[in-house]
Length: 152
Image (cartoon, rainbow, N blue to C red; front, side, top):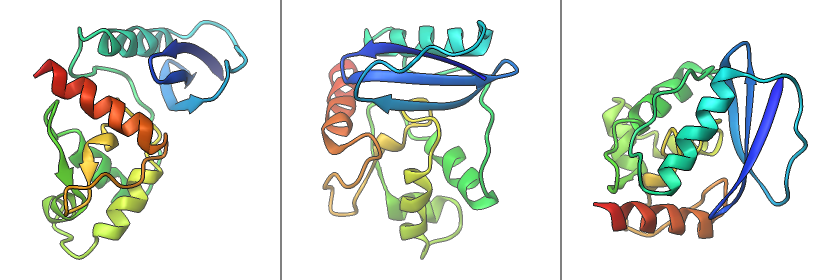
């Protein structure tokens, strides 16, 4: 396992990888420990995330190790169709995956998304248009949405 981190405008971001695939991206309140040998996928993940934060990247092309239930995989795949700078409701994502009553389960899958920012769960909002839960915290979600809206 390899673990590297960098300080972003919204705090420390930790990228973990194994066998040249990213297994998770997470937020940290302080600098996480560096672990393991160099990993090409982790290094590329950090480079692409840094590009995103300076406004030079809108989409990601990374080797991700998608671990999750079939339902979670469907939700995470649907999240990647939300265009940069736009939002969709939990209900819209549920309809997109042909599970129109599963909007709460969509929220749960978002909560367990192992690749925030890259798989843009921050772009999912409540049907009323209000921001709702984000694993990285509402302030980070607000920042990410404002960052993207400033670029479009």
